[in-house]
Amino acid sequence: MNLLGLILSGFVLNAQTNPAILNWLQNTTITGRHYVKNNSTPIVDAALANCQSIKYSAASVYVATNGIPTYITGPFQDGNPSLATAQNAIFKLPLNPAENTGTKTNTNGGNIGLFINGVALFDYRDGVSWQNANNRLGGGPLTQTNGQGDGVWNRDAVVGERLGFDCAKAHPAMGNYHHHQNPSAFSLDLKVISNVCTLYASDGLYAIDSTKHSPLIGFAYDGFPIYGAYAFKNADGTGDIVRMKSSYSLRNITTRTTYSSGATVTAGPPVSTTYPLGYFREDYQYNVPVASSQDYLDVHNGRYCKTPEYPNGIYCYFATVDENWNSAYPYVVGPTFYGVKSGVKVTSITETVSTYTPSTTGLKSVIDANKINVYPNPASDVVAIQLNHLTANNITIELYDLTGKLLQTSQILQGSTITYFDTRTLYEGTYLIKIINEENVITKKIVIAK
Image (tube, rainbow, N blue to C red; front, side):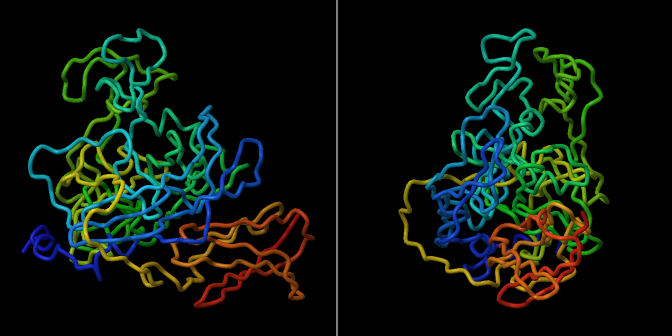
């Protein structure tokens, strides 16, 4: 039986084993935080972060969330007047997703999926295009078209709105905080392309680790899972851990008069420093991967494969990045859904459901000493403590001098991976950092050098 047969024969999962029920980050105590411009001290908000409840029926899972993460949001330095605000939403997603065997459904403006912390996923677009339906803006400014665009030269949000993303690579649309791309912090990329984290440190949903399979980070509106950037090379769950690669590439063009298919369209702006290649979605072309290149993804940015959560195999999307860990088009899902899109925001639950009460087994509760980064070391002004995996519980971080005196205390919150200590007032010397949760205590040394 081939991999597809394995998937179809063992696909329907019960409530006790279905990752679409088990893997949401539930929280009833932690509230969100946000920065305002020119102030590196976050403001504590009233809205609860992550997901507040998970309910399910035989066919659907219902995720109640404010759409607020535990990592710090903002500021949004492109003039966006909005803050991340509570959505008080219930999202209904299919528990037993199925391939769409007919015409594939395009992704759309607005929510197309949900990360495991209840934060929205948007596709590549920002609702701005070179022309609207009735009037070409001949060399003038791009025009907002209510999130839909006009189908010709649609601006890529990841490129066009970079200035407005916070450290976690996200921003709000009328309060609806969302990621268009891989949800890890700018400062953790191998090549840092935004300096927003310098004053407004945050972390994002997970930290990329090239040595291990990335975590399950969300679900698309067709119900299929979304993973981070790295996975097993081979779809059958074997081989090295490798970066999952987008099969889209930039076209070799200097003018914008045709689609990648060769079809003639109303001209967009010539390629320039103002409108570089990649500024528009139509600047990309899809390259069908050869059969042996299993680490190259399909036209929807996914593949059939086995994963830690789905050992029998399932179709998966991946949050793609390039060799520098910068986000790579089409970023997460799109430009079409693989499966039947049925995810939706609902005002209430109208069927009989059960409530899922989480345990600590859905995510790691034991801390791996070899997977904790304390940096920089030596440090002068600030030291960061970074996990490379999500945890189900809050983790306490304590800073001691060598006499055993406790100097500072912090936490890595559920759904986060990083925290910081301000070391500007410390004398030069060696200090101890303790990382503590219910299962174990790990001690790391840090040197302060002015």
